[in-house]
Image (cartoon, rainbow, N blue to C red; front, side, top):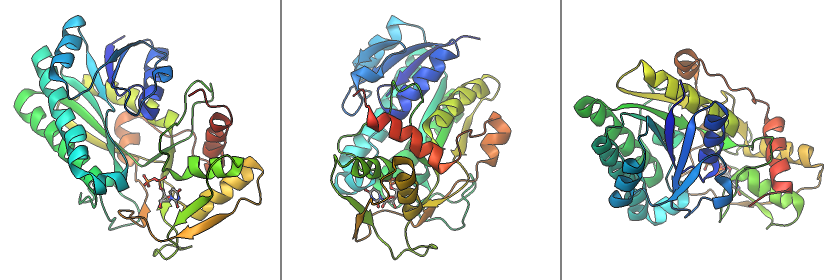
Length: 327
Ligand code: UDP
């Protein structure tokens, strides 16, 4: 069945990849984005409504202009360090924005939502693999804001019959092979793009934050999941909502952890810059030592499985994009 989907935040990194997958699956896409961190050039699969998700009037206009079957909600600020320094801005955007969107959806009678959540809702992991039953105890305002939004979805499910899936991404990485869209943040804080830029020699020197974590090589371990795999999960979640009322949560990861030093090694291999060097820096605030997903539930319920699980393949797709970024 072809659906009419409003993709809020569809000009951003993960939202644009999801928009591409939706369009390729035959769904109709409209992107709503304030372009604060997103890119106009990333909106290639449907019209752009330039609006802020916190603007109730603009949302009302968008929902009056068209009848949507579902919403995907990617609008968020997502930098851990910035969230610690500017918590009100994060709660305003990520919690306030989600509430305004939910209210507009209710008014318009739109009852299906796929929500962009994060592994940061878990805080310090208590076991090596994090499944959906792992306690949620965020250690920074970014994670807290996403957990609050998840709670709103659950309450909206109870009170108003909203159907929702919250997808908790671990570390989104890579770019679609088509080369049309990719990761472009300003400022860039993520490890893979920073390491690639350093390998290209057109950025700053690579800085690695902390080598005294309780992990095998002392650096943080993360679960890097390809952005196209995340996009595919959004499509599967949309279908899942068809016959699953209520609020659902799934962890999305590759299922394997890679340390910061392993990522640097993959970047050396992929880029051919064997001499890529770096400076050690103190730990970055708000970084848990290890975040790796147990994604069995998503595999079972959504029929989803990541296809690009090899770290070098993920890094190579990001390398192709960073070598020729379109924006
Ligand atoms: N990191 C690093 N140097 C950088 C960027 C990140 O050492 O320039 C480390 C960071 O401290 C964390 C890991 O790489 O341990 C992944 O960080 P990233 O910002 O990519 O993702 P996050 O896990 O914060 O969502």
